[in-house]
Image 1: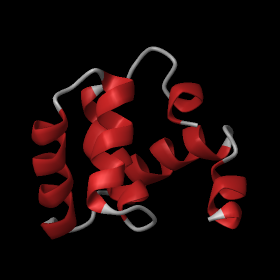
Image 2: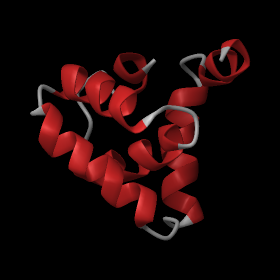
Image 3: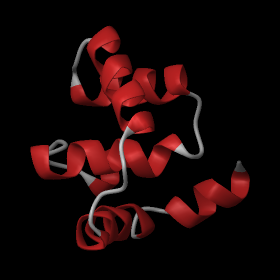
Image 4: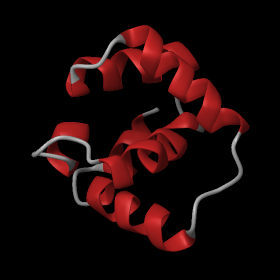
Length: 83
């Protein structure tokens, strides 16, 4: 789903909002592991970013909607239902 929504990689504008969207449905470590593997980032750095997102206030609706639309076009709603 992440690869489908971000075929060219996760850009800086979508990185933290993506973590924020997935944060509500995944454990911290699972989220860090999945995104670290796809993005080619160090797991521990990504885990710190996940913790940071968990303590942040929300992003603008425009940014969240943009990222969410990428995921929806890649079976995000089915993934939520399967969870």
